[in-house]
Length: 150
Image 1 (cartoon, rainbow, N blue to C red):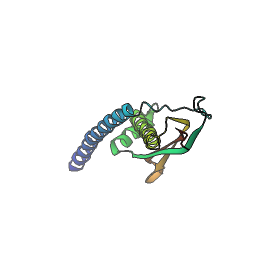
Image 2: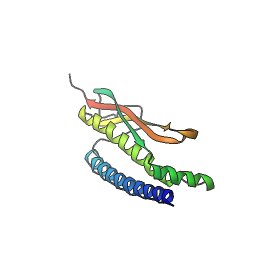
Image 3: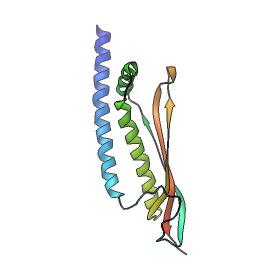
Image 4: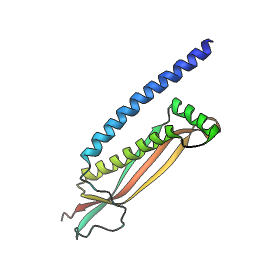
């Protein structure tokens, strides 16, 4: 009986702490996205025509986000019946948005006005038995275009 109580208390506290930190991270992401709206991201491989002479540099944003125990537990339950794993969707969304923000912030630091040829790569980092997902890694990269400075 005590083992069940410990398990349930850990599960509930994992859920509560996970929700708290996820909400806090989303608030940070939303605020930072507002501050970087002026830098457009393009999937074009060419420079916008308004910039005849420009400087170009590679910019990257990389993030690794860990899967908490509660999300792993829910995903395990979902694996039994199949379907969307909503608990992992928010994890991947946060990681993707954070990687893009880090890339845009690096571009802003370099004086860029646009980032072209944007690409996003994802991978999972397995942990423990059965190659269970331990963390999600997202890398965003592109070419930062700055006005030409002789």
